[in-house]
Image (cartoon, rainbow, N blue to C red; front, side):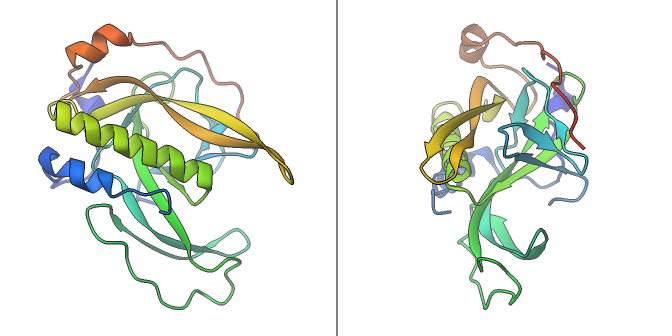
Length: 214
C-alpha cells in the first residue's frame, strides 16, 4: 500500500499516544477547505460533493484518526447558519443564542475525515459530519474501536473501512437508513498493514459505482 494513500492533509498532527483519551471523549450526544462533504442520502446511499456522486461499492476508505471533531451546528431551510466545532481533544465549545432563522436551534454534531484508498475516487478526501442519532452512534462506535486499537497497537492507528448501511423501521417515518463503518484492516500512518489485520481481511476491489445522482 503506497505511503501517500494515508498521508492526510494538514500539518502538525498530534502524537498517536494522545489519541486514545481524545477518541474516548466522543459521545452519542455528541467543511474543511479542499475536502468534499460525505453524507448518506434518504435512500441509504453514501454520496459526496455538490453533484451527489455515489461512493463506489466495495471501495476502501482510510479514517484519519486525528480528524474527529465535536460541536454544534444551526441549520436554516438548507443552509448552515452557524457552526462551532473543535477537536475531540478539546472540551465541547460553548454556544450563545442560536441564529433566529434556525429551524431547530443549535444541534450537537460530531464528524471525521476519510480518504479513499482505491477505485475511481482514489486519493479523494471527504468530511463526514452528522447530527442524527444513527450517525452519531456509528461515529461513536468507530471512535471507541480506534481508541482500543491505539491502546493495543499504536503503530497501526488508521482504520480502513467500507462505507456500509443499515436500517430500522420508524413508526412515523418508515424505513430509516443508518451509516455503518465496516472495518477492513488496520494500517500505520506510513500505509503499512498490521500483520493481524492483513491475515484477517484481504483487500477487496471496488465493485463499481451504482449511479450518479443529480
